[in-house]
View 1 (tube, rainbow, N blue to C red):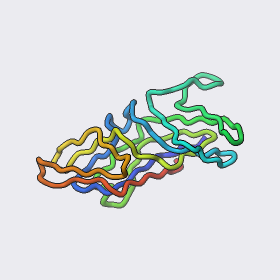
View 2: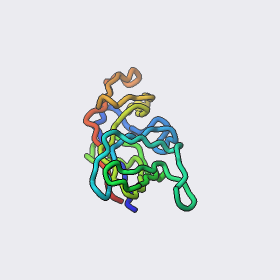
View 3: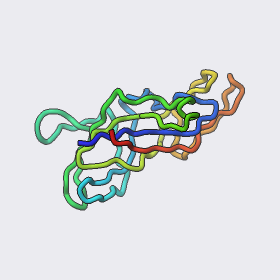
View 4: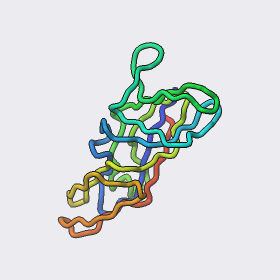
Length: 165
């Protein structure tokens, strides 16, 4: 069992508190990333989608997980379970310090998450308090204008990494 924390970073211009639309533990937010088999190292061809609300029963014992998948190359089964309560929004202070913010913790057995894909369903607010909902980061950036603060706002240089915890 290895826990991987998804860490995100970006350049935030006149913005703060970047996070999934319903908060860091948004039950409907889709996490998209590729998986690498822990046995043979095979990388999944397509992104895997995990959602906090979607669980499946474990094949042995009691409990649930968010993903059970068999490696197409070596046939080994693996699971990925999301662990709530560890994520924090990406703030202006974290960005200015050149650091990453924790978003979601994954308990991985037999797999390692790699290559997180930023997609739709994000929210962010301007330093003046204007809220921007349902932000689409699939193109790698976001730009708008904050009429209340009378300034441009932008998200760029999106980065994600998985840290072993």
